[in-house]
Image 1: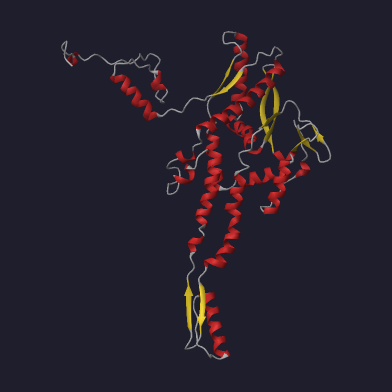
Image 2: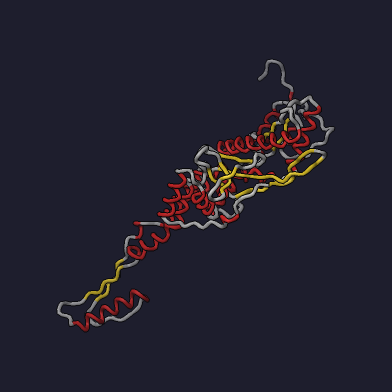
Length: 382
């Protein structure tokens, strides 16, 4: 099993402008630890977490293993062995941990091996936090960080990396603005958002009455009640609070996060006012992004398949791992199409009904509309 430097411990982050600038400068120079820790911290925000769940759901699809040759019995047996091995793992979590490379730059997963049917097989996996690894400035390779030295990651481990901008990088500034901009917003409200209280006194009022008026103004400012000397006046002037609206400010941040993670702003536009669980459509990831994620995970899984295959066979007849990329079935639309085909006399394959979730018996025959003897028309009529 892969060993890491446990002394690194729990990483603490500070959401201050200086810390963010420092972490981002290190990120640009190839040191990702601090900025990744900030990005992971931002994932606890309820809105961002909801967007991430929608993004994860986009690649949780059915998968399959195709043999090197469909007609070769040996290839088929080996593909079945690998399919059974992967099915025994928690594939939903496995896919998510691979996808962390898309969100945080890279992901490292190690495996627990055992002998099954005289073959080396993976029986479990362990994901490691990004803080334990660092890119070597000498060769640009990701390695285990032991402080003063860097060590190679064992070749059996699955190292997933992205050359594109990590998804959570542009989300982080939105999180900081939304959650830690509140402090600046509170200061703004204290200065400009409260009513202004002014005390008026007639010319020539002596110092003692002026002092009483000032005391009255201060009392009203503190508790909205007080007394004032006769002959004076106290006026409260409301400020134009439309100069700033924190709700719109937070909405702007959520919109940016939604577009980055899901590919659209529907999670902000359509979700307000909905009951929890009423409609998850606004949180559905854009199909193009889901297909990109699937393509990335598929490549990493094929690398994993090759690693396991290479430990047992040396002929390089690798099976192919694939994730279903078909368009999700729109039940209402499919029913309308089947009904139209039926009305036009098309013979319907029972498998089309099985795709909609109906249990079809093996002896079920294709469905065909019977001719209606009373629907005959005379020749030459319309």
